[in-house]
Amino acid sequence: MQLTELYNIAEKSGIRVDDFKLDENTQSLAVYFDDMYAIAIDISKLNSSAEIMEALAHELGHCKTHSFYNINNILDVRTKHEYNADKWACEKLIPKGRKPLRTVMLKYGSSLSILM
Image 1: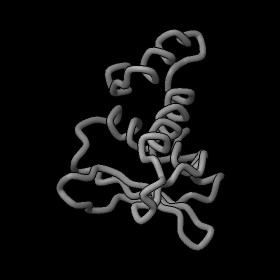
Image 2: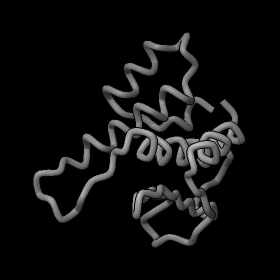
Image 3: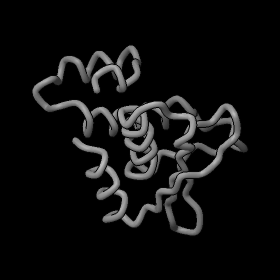
């Protein structure tokens, strides 16, 4: 999958994607507000198109699976939402023929950028 394909998925899904200056510890984020999804990516913090692809795929994963956590709800498990976003990203970025790799990355965690 190419970066342009991810942007096309966002556009066709009505998800706005913008380059946006974020705080020093945040490279990207996705939000859901008023029945709309939006993704902010701080391009200045990413060093390659592979890192941009990884960030965009992950944030799209939050949007496409509606996996958002509520910081005000102590019962909401953040890792569950992150897992869902990572799983969606892996399914899009890792070729279907490499399913064992996809399974290992989801189980143990790893940066998708090592594959690109």
